[in-house]
Image 1 (cartoon, helix red, strand yellow):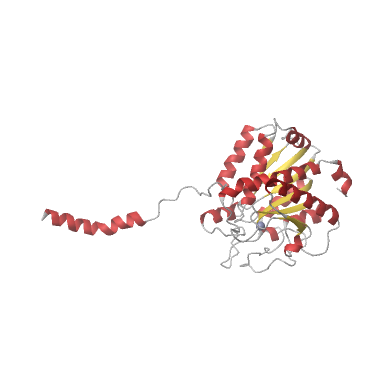
Image 2: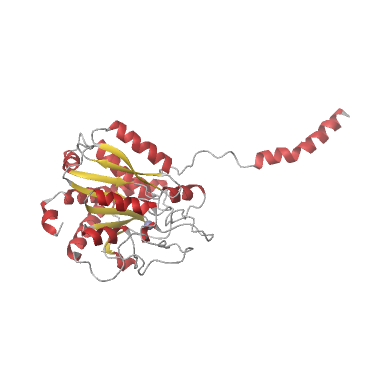
Length: 339
Ligand SMILES: [Zn+2]
């Protein structure tokens, strides 16, 4: 009798036990493996400032649609002061699923700070210029890519019609609304209702209004390309020769590290795209502006680049970034154009 009671008791408890084992565990913090999440980027930027207070300053440059702080790291000597030095801007994470585009500029920041004391070339470029790094412009979309939909591209604007997201790299204000962007809210290249409708792109616009950037490097993936303006038209930019030469030099320096070929070309050769960051800064100021499409080369593995590729992708892109910083501080740059 007792055994029977236990047997029936267990039988009754079975669905509960099964439910217990099958239910999803309580969610931990968002995890992107070795890739940095928004929370990790936020913490580690603050740690860099704490560790290198003389040359690193973290600044809030805006707030995303879901009210996450957008961070910029300024690296320079006398970092708290505005000096009359060439300023260069690196931006990552326009597109949520392009995780490597966040880690590469973040690792660049770390490299500059950690090697300042020991590497005279690094010290010289940090002392002579202002290096601004915005590693994660689209924190909402990135978080959504980590937690819910790995292949999400846009930000997380509620468009009010059941669709979400504006393509931040079609929302900038030079030739906004042109070919290679869409007015359809459900489109992955939806440009938004007006130029700079999104707080993320407005943050970059406002930052550029306060600091005269003389070059921009915007990281994306994938395809292994070094792209220069224009994107909105196949017509050549006024400074085509200079842009193309700088892109080629960067592509060559990338190749020299791990023999990975990144093709230098006009952005419109890939496809027409209106309202991107590089057309905008170049179009407004003539500052040479580049999009680097990072690893991999093709759709396999496409956006889902394995953790093991983070370090080599950073390593090969480091000399190109350093070259661009040094160029902004050179006599060549000052003689090159209207800048
Ligand atoms: Zn992209």
